[in-house]
Length: 304
Image (cartoon, helix red, strand yellow):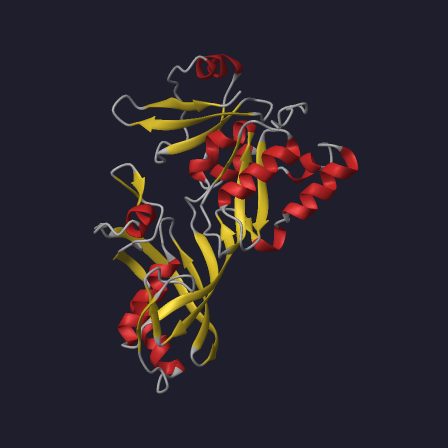
């Protein structure tokens, strides 16, 4: 039976703590039913085996989803040494084993240093990256010989949290597009014994942290208590997705230009590629990009 969309449109972003066992699309579907909203999407896919921060965009929030991962992500990960799997995680088939008995924390920390900074990373074959219009994991499961290209990523921080052989717990801060499964696999290769990702928690995605997240159960309780009104209190405003960009406040005449999609001049922040645009009352109007040739700001997305 189709849900009835009775509630007023809710524009914003929810900081959801996704539970293990659910896909990101499962979370979207649950929130669509709970809030009775048609326009719901997610930013920064989490594998079913992973948990943690999953930003959910509702209403006009779906129009800023692409900017939510620009400021990077953070994870707490556990990897097990001595075993390699075809999916690079605990759900895959074992493809090789080796002894990790002599592995020390000092050796691990030395190798981790090699993985910080800008680098090229090869995504897992079992990933959602599209090849010939199909997710790579579907082609891999069908037995097709697939080849993925390395992608540029940046790992800002890698820090050991705990080492209890053969299991390592570590924290990582990285750019969007980083596969922690690939990182676990590559660390195991460097140490010569193999490794797979055993557990993963995303502790930050863009501006959202795990400490400030809510579960689906908490959201459902809020809806049950007061329809969508209490749930709306969990919504963050759209412009939180773009806090890393400068803000331009415009006069009423220039606001009219923006609302009609016309380019405009502004004296400040011409060094930036993107900017948040507000009216004189502080309402978030649009996202604008800088046109260096014309030295004008061009509205990219008008959000009113």
